[in-house]
Length: 153
Image (cartoon, rainbow, N blue to C red; front, side, top):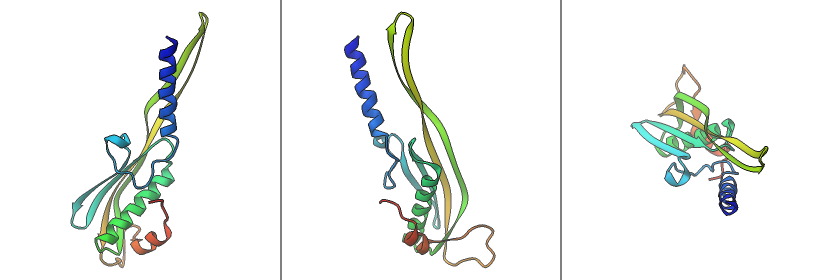
């Protein structure tokens, strides 16, 4: 029984070590990244849906920064100097828990647990060839963002 507890403890510690950092910018969503990272789908010649899933250590501000940088890069590479978000949604969801427990004696059990959370940001971005005279929302400048919004690529 003690060997099993030691094995489970080692696995739990290893899993915690793997998730101790924020999800990196250049992560592509896949089985191997536990469903975290970017997924980009072109939905029109000038539009993309971008989703980013970050781990427990990736806060909303960092997710938004990542998605904004990815939006600027996509639009810049496609020849659009400006872009707008037609939709934008950022959420934080509990996705599971990790717990470890052990019985000390017949009356006392020691355990610890934590809830794992993932943040998700989904946007639809549309590239623009020119800056509209009377925009209905914020218009972003791709060159400015790529120059001033730094992420670790």
